[in-house]
Length: 327
Ligand SMILES: O=C(O)C(=O)[C@H]1CC[C@@H](C(=O)O)C1
Ligand SMILES: [Zn+2]
Image (cartoon, rainbow, N blue to C red):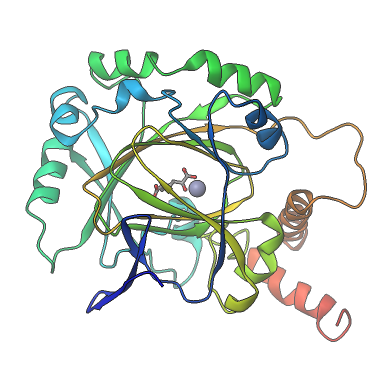
């Protein structure tokens, strides 16, 4: 039994030499760890299942992106830094947040220079709010960062994008976090190669068919795609993986994922590659896949909000339609 440690912050276990939070409920399996040029990689990605690409050097030019290097080279711009009173950094849509009554943003987004971010990180006291830099990379960064970025293995990435018939690369998010930071479980509507640069993260993933156990917020809610709660712990079947420097994790579109920087990691730096989905296949076969059913549910919520003219009427109408009838 892995050693369990409890302190005022919570209960932790050792996972492959890393200290991570202990979640009693989860039946967690492993996901395949393959060399990036393993012949099985393509079929796993084509099947939209997660896979960890090790020794991939897809992002090796950025393994030197520690705080000192980034401070010298990221540039003089301001960066989006989220601050949280807890260790959780749940995403929310700021435009929707303004229109959703009684919504209390779970984090606060602050624009700050990288110097300030570094000093906050380096002088953080236990009583301080935690911080998480999450910034889309754009051409405002310094020339050395551009050089490192151009040295990513773009041939492999664009080849995979073409083979999988994905849409365009929409963005690369640069993530710099503290040990123990958590991005709570959610899904994205994009294909994702998640690259780990410095430090270690533990990623827990759930198949899209676990939707019924993860209770995402309503589509029109600021926290659309984020899980509201975990009541059906026993039924949840998931996968977990530790990602470390140089690893690239394929997170398939619609797969739920929870990401935590391990407790004994240093500062964690990651960069992801979000690709738009490919076109809907001309031939739809039945039964629909779990992913297609999530897309259908989203379309129904979206259409009902438009038809009713008020997103707050969607819930009551759906309850009226289902409760007591579709038992
Ligand atoms: O790449 C994704 O899909 C994400 O959810 C990222 C947003 C926060 C990131 C993290 O490492 O905590 C993961
Ligand atoms: Zn995500």
